[in-house]
Amino acid sequence: MDAQQSSLPVRGMPSGALRLLFLSIEEVMGSDGIKAVLNGAKLSHYINNYPANTLEYGVTFGEYGKVEQAVEDFLGPRGARAILIRVGRELFRYSLREQSALLGIAGNALKNMPLISPQAKMKILLQQIVGAANKTVNQPARLEENDEAFLVVIDQCMCQWRPRHDKPCCLVTVGTFSEAMKWLTDRPIEVKEITCLNNGADACRYQIPKKLPEES
Image 1 (tube, helix red, strand yellow):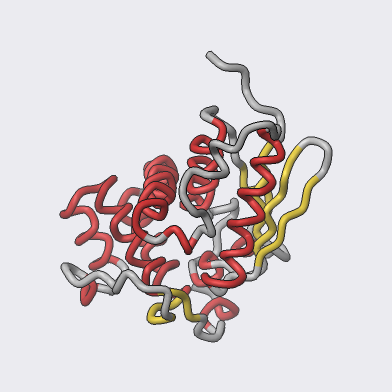
Image 2: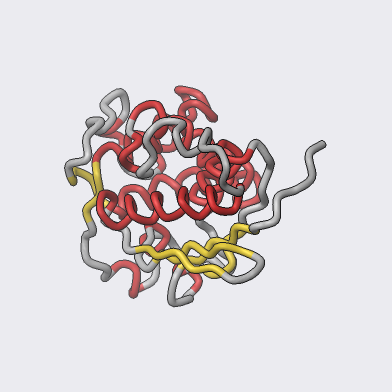
């Protein structure tokens, strides 16, 4: 970790957010996998002792970032990429079931809303997620758009507490947005992180195309 990252102030986040990350890693990597990851992150006190499923601030962005980094260290950068995206997908599913306030989503009402376009639904969902990031997760974020895509812009991120990477590294978040769009539209939408705070950019930006892929 470089000097800039090591000097970052502690930033609190809801205990439930870190719990969901642990559950998602366990789903993808198994019980032995999450134990290895927590040991690697020097967070072994969480083994069989996950944080509470609460919105109270009881954990930190730094802990979240350490766990993401430990997955990468355990599997290697290439192997970890697909796994971290899968973890993000699982995280969205767990969030819907266990702590939907972290995503600002309440049930299937939006998904089943008639008479509005998929793009309008996408915008509403992304606005809800951005709103929850600001209000609940302690993660400043905003939604922008152009003719081709929506852009979720995040101004503080767990990646800032990870060692410097030469490419965008917020793969869990990519997976979460990917699964959110699939859940909403029933189509596989390619989400890309195009700038990353970890690499020295002014924000993490996630590009979500407005045009849906053709049904197979």
